[in-house]
Image 1: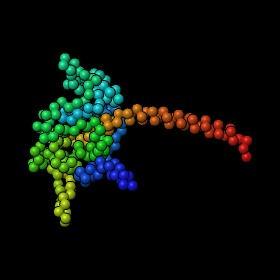
Image 2: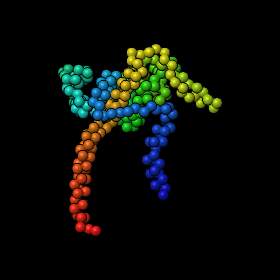
Image 3: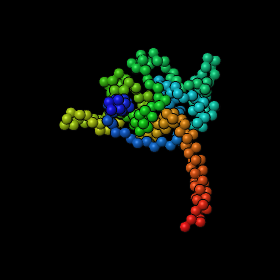
Image 4: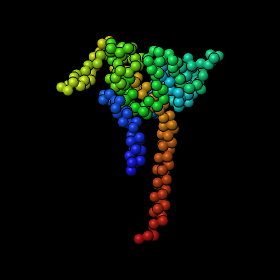
Length: 248
């Protein structure tokens, strides 16, 4: 019995750690459609051009990603052509690694940015979507930014020019606990709220795909399996009627 309890506690340990480290912020639901290739392609473009500077996705290769979401070699080279070999040739088969080195990142952020290959599976799509939309200016932090979903995060708001700059409004209750009330716009960005939310939805969709690329194939196979079962069900029913026609 004692061994069983220890096993259960070890199994629940990651969930307990995650719960303890949570911010308690309300997460916004995001609709992810992995059949929408335009959304996945835009998400990939955002990730490679803005996130990959510091964060790796080292479980994914460019050519695998391109094949899955419908990008050609020419489109890869056009939007992600800075990934080259020693001869200056675009490496479509390269792993998606961060352009900044670990030592440089450590010096800049006092920590090495985590690999984001499976962030959507570890945290959830709603968490990632809300996190990317929850940065606010905070003069007390080294980067000048903070995040409602991930308080005191080292990451600055790399997409601030799109979203603009916001200030978070907190209210303290009778027990001295601060609660997030909302954002105040300090300076508008180049995108409207609707446009920025759509961009973050596309980025989230790409992160969900990257966390489990086989889902695209599994969904396609699932359709064929359901069609097969539908036809097989009809023949199975007719066969059953034929076997039992003389049974009263």
